[in-house]
Amino acid sequence: MKTVALIVSALAACASSPSGHASVCETGYLPINPDTAYAMDNVAGTATDVRTGLVWKRCVEGFTWNGTTCTGTRALLNWQQSLALAEATTFANADDWRLPNLKEILSLAETCRMDPAVNVTVFPLTPTAVDDQFAFWSSSPVVTTTDQAWFVRSGRGDTGEGARTLTKLVRLVRGGG
Image 1 (cartoon, rainbow, N blue to C red):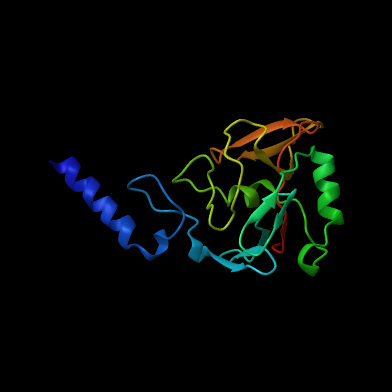
Image 2: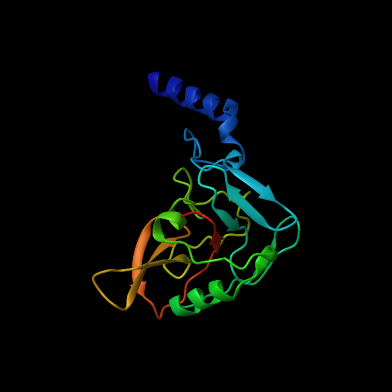
């Protein structure tokens, strides 16, 4: 009977919590990245994390923002291609886009859900497979080797390291330190 009461309490907390909006969590959990953590610019297709000041492209590279969601086909790029793409991007009239470091891309991971482990209201059409191909490159190299870099898996929100020649997803950011 205690277990049932705890589950009912957790459900009530999720339903009534103002921070629980949109990022659909597993039963009994609240999102760490609710909609309210972001200021979304639906014209530009960006989302600013109000806690960090980082400005994120809402769509993964390859997709295009149409004013309400992402459309197109995701791009899978190796690490060098990802860095070069970031350097050349002038999205939303800004030319300071970059590949996020590991801590930054990991900050998007929504720990209360999986597949994808991200707020899909803020970041729609994020690929949902849990394998390593559907992971996001970070700009952070693995310091113990010269041919690997860190990534964050889209499906689980956990980290991995892989050869820089592998292809992965890219989500660009600007701002921050």
